[in-house]
Image 1 (cartoon, rainbow, N blue to C red):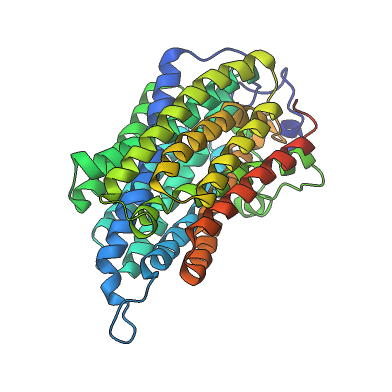
Image 2 (image 1 turned 135 degrees about the vertical axis):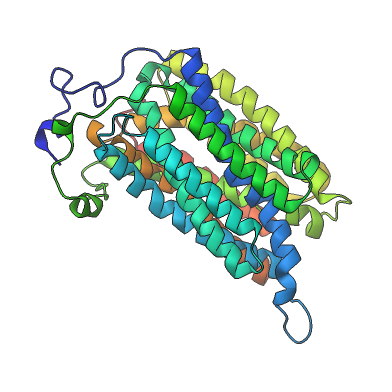
Length: 432
């Protein structure tokens, strides 16, 4: 990297690379919020509802000895989600690194946000028309390439535009946007748009609309050509790695983010199958909507309240430790008694814990970034801690459900993983 950029001094850096000091206003926050809702809706409505339904409708292609083996749905869904998560894992740092180098008059991030949204929408369309699970996997890979890249540029908006003293509140809102995207997506594709193909199309349109609105109506500072990193693109991509030895706080923060997201994914991604296979709930879709509504309300309240408290106190780690404890408790009680009644208690507990986490985590994560010139690339690496669990969780769940056929074991594993985050975050030294 150019040493002049790496020095990161306020007197020499352009506005695109300088540490933000002006608080962002309500209009900018609203548009970022809407873009994030569209992004998360495009990810989680398919993952939680549409992909499981489509796999279930196509699983007759997998026949052994004249019948469909037990657990086939969960295993095939794990393959599709795992393939997509690998795409997101690749797209996050690569698109982030490329946007860090972009000198377009429209700014560094906005052109990539729109292009990635269109790519994601195309992939979703491929999934919608898929005649087999194999084509589904290809389409979801394309979709997650676009959505993963969009995630990199949207998360870079936080360190690009928001001062550190406002990031707890904004982080809480980002967590709320993830929750609202998840819940609204489930509502749209189960109640409002009941045809599977129309559900996919609605998701694609909302993703693109949110991205375009944010790109058109908000500023994105242009990077002057003389501040573009003066190394070849291939060399830049080879330097995506951030050494945890040189930047230990970045490494420990990354590990914390990974553990919390892995625990959350293990606890939520297979709820539809859990309600049908283990609880035998009479209407699994409605049951899922009920649980997600409870999760959503608790997350919304926790994110709003604790985001403000995190900013006022200037402390981040106590909130993250508390969130891990709350989420771990939700997983343990559900593992101990995997029933509908306990699920009604565990869902809001999990939501409250995840909301508390998002109230502090984005602020902590953006405060340990190694260099201003690599914000999007480094945020892309942090986003791998979101994407990688979507690879690991299906693999672990495939083993637990495919071989052991045990939802209590799956939820117990979620609890252990989540509580581990309370330990890793204590190793971060530069952020209280």
